[in-house]
Image (cartoon, rainbow, N blue to C red; front, side, top):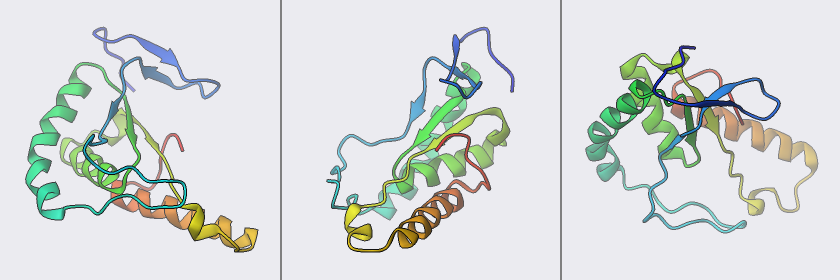
Length: 138
């Protein structure tokens, strides 16, 4: 991974990963937030597709300026980042942190073995959206 002299980097905890002091996330402020028992608001696919071309140059500029830490919480964030990184051929140049938000209602009253499978499925779904077979941070 190339580090830029335009950016300061720090080691992330005990991971050994040198991440940019400035990270890049895709969370849209106007979206309803979930509760621990709820789910994320519905995705407006038309709006998502219309705005993707505006997102790619932002991600590209961030990488050019030395940002190497990207965070994706919501499904459309992972999808958008995956599209951009694929187009820019930059997946190997950045660290991606995925957050899994399995609603508690999905796990309530189920045996622990169900929890494990559900969480694995959620990770696999995020990786598919990211168009990657790995995440750097979970």
